[in-house]
Image 1 (tube, rainbow, N blue to C red):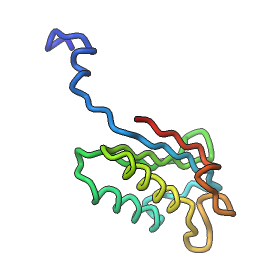
Image 2 (cartoon, helix red, strand yellow; image 1 turned 90 degrees about the vertical axis):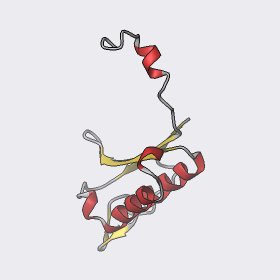
Image 3 (cartoon, rainbow, N blue to C red; image 1 turned 30 degrees about the vertical axis):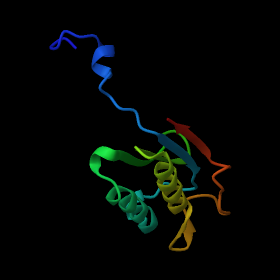
Length: 117
């Protein structure tokens, strides 16, 4: 702002907003998500299907709650929702006899889902 002598509002005009989906998934344990094959595959699938400038994918645990958070952002709203749902399903999926999520399969309706345009 100082170097261009412009207010933040003027500099922010060039920012393009993308649709964003955030899904919070209850978990029993917080294992390393990179070591869970289904999650790594879902992340890789979403990342390889788009260019780096087309959006982003974040998967992390809450620092204060027993939740995994899946956030996907991109240009195409339907694609963003599909990737977020697929990755959330991978977090819930059984891996080596245990699950990261609830014992019974949690539906998207039970999870906290936020969609922002």
